[in-house]
Amino acid sequence: MKEFIEPCIQIAQRAGDAILEVYHQDDIELCEKSDNTPVTKADLAANEVLLAGLKALSPDIPIMSEETPIPSLEQRENWERYWLLDPLDGTGEFVLKSGDFAVNIALVENNKPVFGVIFWPTEGITYWAMADLGAFKRENGEDTKIKVQRQSQLKLAVSRRQNIATVSQYIDHEFDTLPLGSCSLKACAIAEGRADAFMRIGPTGEWDTGASQIIVEMAGGKLFDAEFNPITYNQRETTENPDFIITGDQSYPWHEMIKPHKR
Image 1 (cartoon, helix red, strand yellow):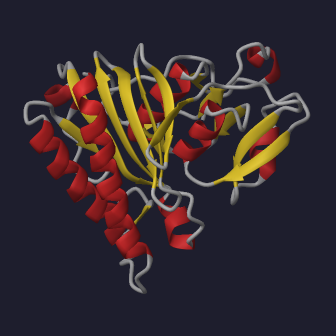
Image 2 (image 1 turned 180 degrees about the horizontal axis):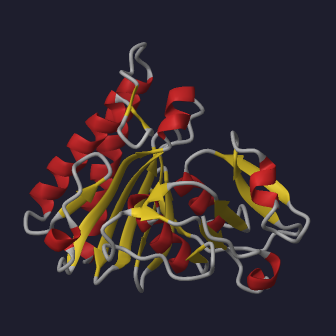
C-alpha cells in the first residue's frame, strides 16, 4: 500500500491545480444537483483528473466519487477495496472564494479507511495518513508528523456560515472557536492540534469523512456519528452520513461534554 502514497499526493495536487484554474475565472458554471447541493465546473474538472489518475495507477480498484453515479449496494457491497473521492470538498466555500476547500482521496479496505490524502489548493498544503504509519502534513515538500493536542481552552472548529447555536446546543462546556470552511480542513485542524473538536450538523456523504477519518485517527483523534457510534462505509444503500463528531485529545470526557443526537 505504501506505493500509493506519492502517486496519490501528486494526483490530488493535479486535481487542485484544475480547481484553481476555474477559481480565477469569471464563469464557474455554478448549478444545483438533484440533492440540492452546489456543483461547479471545478468539481467536475477535479473529478476527471482523479478518475484518470487513479484508473491509471490501479485499474483493478473500483472508484466511488461524489461526482459520478453511485452503484447500487448490490453492485458494490462485496468490494474489498475501493477509492472514495470528494473532488472538491467545500464547494460553497469555493463559490464564496474563501479559499477553504480541499481535494479528498481515501482508500477503503474492508469497509474502513486505511489511507487518505487531503490537499488544500490555495495553501499548497497536503495532509496524508496511512494505517500503522501515522499522519503527516506536507508543506514546501517537507513532511511533518502531526498529532492532536489539547488546547488551553476548549476550541471547536466551526463553519463560518453556520449559526453557532446549531452546535452549542449539543455541548455542555464553554468553548472558543476556529472558523473554517470544508469538513476535511476542519478535521485536519484537529489532527494537527489547532482545534479540539468539530461537530457536523447537516447532510454529508461518506466521501466527506473517508480521508478525514484516517488522518484524524492516525493523529490520535476519533470520528464518530453524533451518537458516538462508528461511521459506516459501503454498508448501506444510501451513502449519506448521519451527523458526526470529530474529537482530538482523548483525555477530554467527550461522552459527558457532548450530547448525543440523531438527525
